[in-house]
Image (cartoon, rainbow, N blue to C red):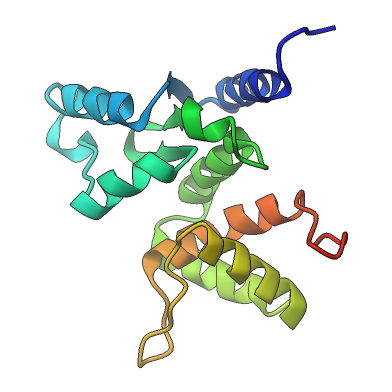
Length: 173
């Protein structure tokens, strides 16, 4: 039996899962280390592979357990945050890779998400939206009835996460 704390065991399992998926895994103790690595990496990457992050996205990394870099097929893990999360970062980020690879960009994922949502109950949609809001994802609806590209690229990964979370009443999705 593994004598390491549960969060270390889960992180090890996540890393192994990421590697088995075919993605490269890069783990760091803090968000600042991730950002420093990204900046250093960007100095060497061709323009089409550079990792472009806005100021807001750079700030959001500090609270994220990880993120998926689609052009380079790399999953970054922020170990200080990932250890505190209720769900595995590995499955969440690998699912991003699968969705980008097989469904496409946010506009294409929007079509998939809307079809998927049409099969869900209102309760299920509310659970996913509540989880996304709790995680500070933009779930707002604009005047034309559209949501942000982030909403569509995060919806299915958050639905997957929600399958493993017990609600306050003891039920799950």
